[in-house]
Length: 364
Ligand code: CTP
Image 1: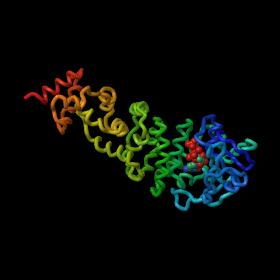
Image 2: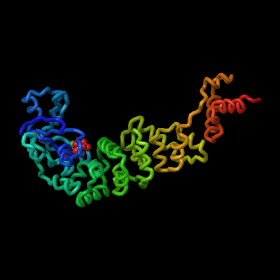
Image 3: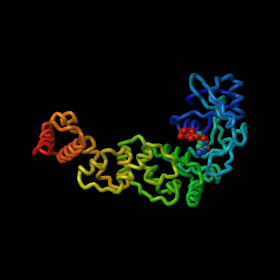
Image 4: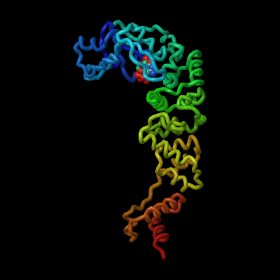
């Protein structure tokens, strides 16, 4: 456990308990106080950074670290698929654990006694490597749990329990598209950012892509391309996979939208020469090029990365100016020509490039 605070009513909860049992490092430490966490933090005299009485959460500063403590609470979903509203702050720990996504995430550990509280069989499911929901409405309440199940399954090498898989299939066969796409995007990013072939394979095989909206065109899994994507490891990995689908329901950032737009611009173009390939990809974000590899043609992308991407000319604009050519539109033509010649293997040295400019643009 990364941060330690002790109280008989205070528990580590969720991912941090699961990760400790699994013996893997935790991304964060979640605390849950059985009762009102804000009153608890005040009574303990903790330095309070922020209070959120509507959710019963409090952020405190301990050993110079910001730590969140949540009150036990129940939640209700007045609008299925959207954010729940908090119902009962300070409820029994059992009720708080019962609102959670999977049995493996619904355990608590007492901060004083170290006792593991496991009402729903989380320990057994960890032992059997199973992802299991707590109740049959879990995916209806929160469809993003379908992506979360995929994320945890791949991260830990677990499988969906049969009944949970059945509930997932049932939900995906009649999705209610009125859901929080903000949450869906967050989970999609985390899941695809694992950059793992199994994520995409199951995203397609289990029809999870259906969450993104109706009438999606399926892009079959290609393990060879995924190996390549893993090697390149671009910043917005998630979009290389998710962007193959219609994402109009997600709110994209400007950069993300540019990646999609660039892919849409190039996806119907079939380059016929190495120079065509170079021109097609030279100004594209790497993610758009990888999407092209996945959905259109991997071979040309391999050629681009292997022998074209790093091609550099020796000549600069100054060198061309020294030849007596006035700066203007002609410079673009000159550089295009030089790149073409270089790609064809006809230019080796700076002198070759100068000579090529002289003979093409200065003779006659
Ligand atoms: N949770 C949930 N339903 C969700 C999201 C979260 O029930 N849609 C609960 C789970 O109990 C989860 C906890 O809130 O363990 C914290 O959520 P989060 O930080 O997203 O997940 P972690 O389990 O901590 O996993 P990670 O290691 O990815 O942070």
